[in-house]
Image (cartoon, rainbow, N blue to C red; front, side, top):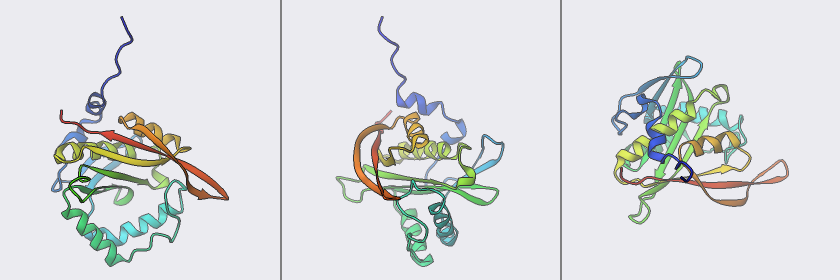
Length: 209
């Protein structure tokens, strides 16, 4: 007999917390989950009224992590521009802006935006950011599971793409856990402290179950 076949991605996804598998459409109610440390996590869709708080969050994480494509003060959007962006995301069926909150504080965000043209609307790119104070609590995993559930119910999304630094091993392992595969390597994507850093391109294919 040959080696035992590796469980399909669908099986891995089904083994995630049952709370994430509830209806996750644009009108879904906020979800409450328990983190590894016992704290309660709320996942919800961003609202235009979140604009100012989200800009503060982005500026905060920009100074905490070098895994993002921007540094402190480089995310140059006004509150009104951010508000308009959030409104557009809320109206687009192929886009999502997810907010993770702990005790009322924004702990993380996840964005996904599919292409606009018919030939590209089946795929989009994932962006994920977690505040340093909440690293290693499982927030990224919960948000990723939510995104995959939402994408499966979307009816159009068939591919989730992302870029990750080759030395960001915790993130790479998380993506692999959810079935993302390595699709390539882009050299010199980042330039930090006088050195270039490569990134991996990774993707998850979503086919009808």
